[in-house]
Length: 367
Image (spheres, rainbow, N blue to C red):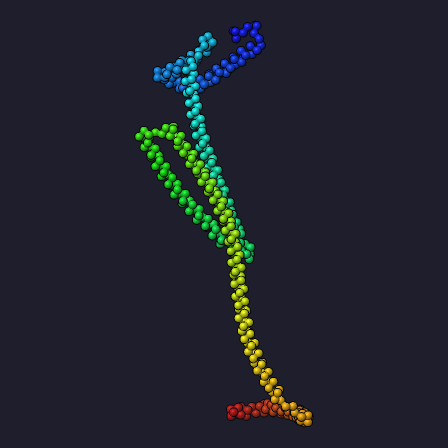
């Protein structure tokens, strides 16, 4: 500002003001970086680090001491760092920032892996729940319903849940074995890492980068395998739906076949009965034909009598009928007389019993 006097133009003053602002911004950034660097340095170790530190670090420590000793004298005496010192501090802050970024990136990747695993687990659980819901509707809600009563059969529900429990136990056992295998592998890898550390074969950053690249490649392969597995599961679900459709058709056809077999059996029984009746009717027909033949032969051999003979026979029949009626009246009269005599005899016997009962007893004894 000392170069610009009262005769300076307004543009020159604005340009000078912009330069001062830029210089202030630059100083503020440098001050922020220096302050951050000094905050990272432990004050207790400053004296011990001065002797072992580089000249740049010694100058920085001296500047820090001078600023903390007297703020009032800063205007009287301007303290500045050299370009080499600024570059050294900036390089150290850059390395520190890069380490923080890598650490944050590593932690973020862990969080992302956790979220990704949680999402995959949720998707798998959702697919399993959909599959279980579909199988429950297919096997229990629709498949276990009694066709006659319309209610679900309890035995099939119990059998369904028992099968599910057995499959869950088998899955738990499988996961337990897998978990044990992974624990053994983890212990083995930890032992190998410990041996490498003891032997001085510590992994460097390049090795970690190489391992991270391989890990990403394996993760990509795992994602591809998971996509293929999802496709296979989808295809398996479609195949299972088609299989269930054919099972329903087969069940309907089996029921229809059983119904037809029962109907055929009933028709065969009816046919057997009809055959027996046909045989009986055939025998009766033969018998009737024989009788008809005999009657036809008798009809052919029959000789019609004369009219006089017919009249004579009718007259004889009339006389015989008349005689029979006469005898029937006589029989009726005789029966009436017999009943009358029986009553009289009974009365006489009862009278004789009342008069002389001992004679009656003698008669019975004699009899």
